[in-house]
Length: 335
Image (cartoon, rainbow, N blue to C red):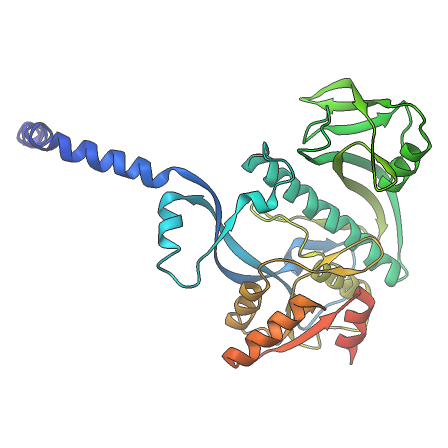
């Protein structure tokens, strides 16, 4: 019986090999990557499940990070995006600082952005809740380079020192660069798991001396109560900073900000607690509505205006709150 099946299969391949080769080649063609991300929709995710404290107050509601679903662009996905109305194409070049950057470079920068956002969230939440925290270690990474000015540093380099000077903050390095009179500096880095000295030229842009790179900082903390944050490998970016900060703060304080509500939102947060705008906000709002969130927190400005416009247009049943700072978000949720 097996021999009959085998013989038929061989005969079929002999007769139809041109068709089979065509289908295989067509499949490879459709799978070929293009220089686009394809945004296919949004949703929300309970950030509380990613944050663990050694002791915390209970919450009756939840804080949820709003996200967009992005596909790595292929010819097939690119073509389908012209057919499905809610699929949107985003050129990868819009995310690049240097034309030479690839998908892995963008992913690394996005991962560092997430970790930096979580660092800011810890510091801000513990400060606002009057809880103790202490920075125990700091790592500084090169997260971006530019077409101009050129640099000898590379994305993923971990900066150990500049001219043997070490600082725990980006501000420390920036201030030190302004004091240097020489044209070149020696930057000690870890690259490919090896320590190296890299000679770098200083550039002056708008009156400030720079290395021609963007830097990301990741801190480790000793906190009371102890905190642990674990996001999935597929999650990245800084747009969850606001919601992460609010959830940590809510766990540290007796007054429950959620008041039994499902709160979704988006927005970056800097080290001073300012909330910054993000991309893809309409998909994030629609994802929050789909998951029946009660409130959508969004950065004030163009993000807030876009959400209000979409709410009116589609008669969305959700309360939208625009905020400029973390403290403003806390105050508005309390009211």
